[in-house]
Image (cartoon, rainbow, N blue to C red; front, top):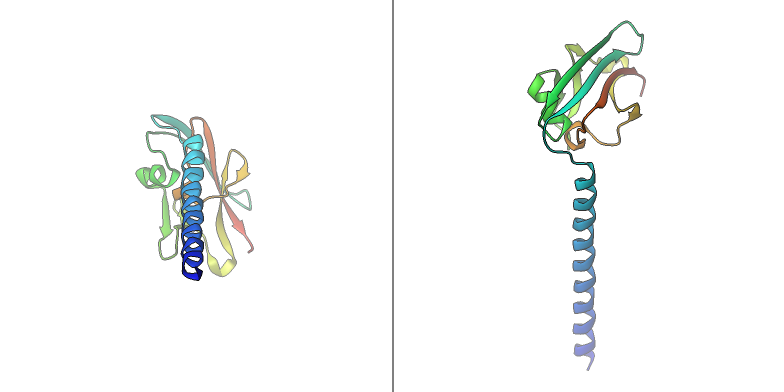
Length: 136
């Protein structure tokens, strides 16, 4: 009798975990599809620094879905690939100097991005900004 109860408990636990995993996968797929836009898109790339001494604007077209792919296509960034995700180190030939606590802040349509370049989907008419920022 104890063995049957133990087996039912294990089976129930496995089913609950399986449902949770499938729900998470479905949730991620659903929200990815909301942000995804396939086909040719136009986006504006603005590169500026914290001192307002450098400000350059580009207008690009791409059929890439993710910002990282689109930027790679234009050869406009360099990045450090040693971590879990890419860390942008250089934009438009300007290298962030870590000894001065400089880093590139990514903004999408005026808002700080909550994702890195390889997880940011491009939508038509997006305004992408890289702002050289000082201070951690």
